[in-house]
Length: 359
Image 1 (spheres, rainbow, N blue to C red):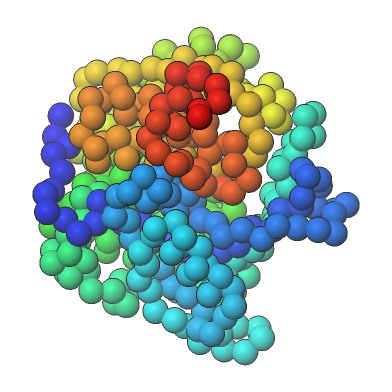
Image 2: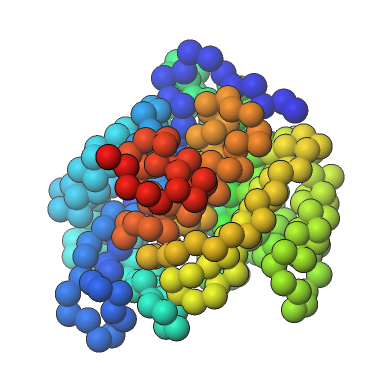
């Protein structure tokens, strides 16, 4: 397996992203019946990066902000609180109908009532991300980056961001930075752009070192045949998932790590949570285990963040999936979309099923 990381880098992890805010009703209530909300900073990619940043590794975000916006200042303050460095130009709002940061309006659900999410992304400034606004040679050569993580959300956000992600992967490949890619298919992003995005995603996946996705992601983003459909229990689907990942590996042979999560929803606050990892020719499986869920949003990102952190720490591959599984489970216990681990022990305690008081 070829996953040797560069040495003497300023940044362990870099993520490109479009930052926004999430409005969440308090006490798990639905949006339509609420008049009190919490405002949080969010993006899928910073959800991933937060595992490493809270645990002390140097992390950086490449993004764009609305100039003189109080929401932009709120986002910058939050990133600083997460120990995340950031770089990005300030774009003039252009009047009240101009650019802004996206709004994610979502409740957490409760019991038999599932969560509902509404994305309001009109005028999103992150859609303007452009490689010409960043000195990629400085970032990847002079500063140095061990891993860059990309999500299909930012790669499909706009034609500009698709090209931005392509330029980033080309620069990363040129300078020996490892590439992680979570496919994250969203139908609304792909509508009318299927051919264009299939080509872009295929190019990114072809040079990636770590590929993450579920059965829908691999089928719809890359055209890989998925597992057989049916009413099988989640444990019985594991072999079908392995066969699918095998097909992914055959087509995208540059990657040496492939991963997917397994989830069965019993109710909003109780899930079965598992994962499958292929590193080289070695399979690692976490059979689905019951977890309690406060808010499911960000659980998959937490898994990827924990996986990347474990790779950056140069642990044995068996621990990669364990730490990723536990990081994802931990993320679902926070009201924020991202986990905020106090230390590695907090995550390992989740893996060990140890919820006793720590004094």
